[in-house]
Length: 442
Image (cartoon, rainbow, N blue to C red; front, side, top):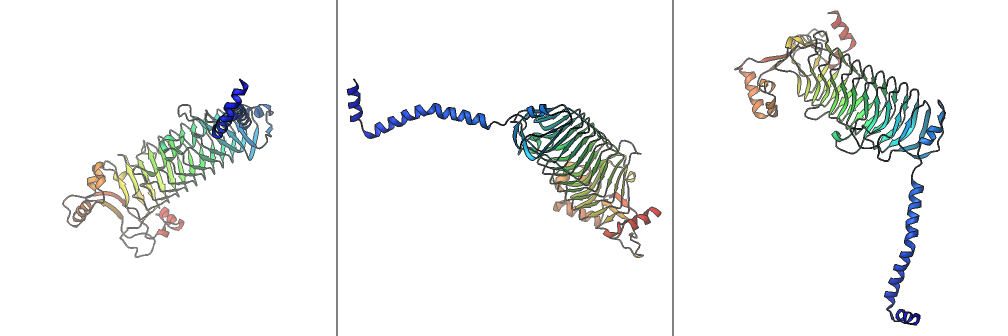
């Protein structure tokens, strides 16, 4: 039998013998290759960081070696973790990567990545759950659904972090920072981009200072969140800059809000919010610079003072039947329509004074910095789209422009007064402390 086999092999073509040998070798080596892959997979899996957390004393400092560690991680005791930019926590695409359920902890220099994708579970890079006085500083959080979430968490500091969501459509991303029933927190100097919103819900007395938010839907979205400070932020390329619903006592000052160009986008949008100060902002190249309805109570006035509102489709748009806006010392430059008041709005309920209007046609013969005649905006043919919003599609069309020209030349209907500024300033540089002092003396 052996001799027959040897003769068959000897008589077989060389190519057939070589192929059979290769198949046999592959079959023999396959278990080794498979085993090698399993070993490599086991070796490359990052070790869990939770063991290092559990081994760190209360109030101590975690000293894990540089590298990548797996999540999820739960911290329930105060401690210091300083990754120095060399520690990555990888959530593996499941749930929230790092949960903080303590007070007085400090997390610095970490790279937190790959959370789960559930909006219902609010899968986040970092969750602070009922903790206070924590410091979250200098971390990079990316490829997560929600960035940093605070739930019933007070007096925390979120400083100098870099936050990115996922490369999805804006509505499918999560919030870069989300506050829910959280008070007295400081959110400062963070670089936030490609998120859905920053959402603040039922949260009082929070501070948002010197953050950069770009390429997102709503940069800041406040709901029932009173006495919030929004200061020195750069908000650019978002659908809307700042929106506030039922939020009183806001201070919005010294921000730069640019390129909120969606058809319904606005630099600042307020609804049913009062006692708000909008001061010293630059609002540039938005669909609407400031959009606001009347405050709920006549005493809760919205004050718009010393802002530069330029290159927008509409500079300011007020609607609501009670007025309630005080507009002082602002500079309106190169807006397609400087200001609008809704057809049902109370013209006399809003006060305009001491603003610079680049299309003012009066003179300042005594050179006191104030125009000799009031600045007024009248609506002629524009009443058509002011009273019928669906007609706005034809705004600035040749037909409406021609109709408006004839309306101004030989009116066949009474025009509507939109606003009257009795003392407009005559130069852009006239909105200075000297002029404001003169205005106060008047």
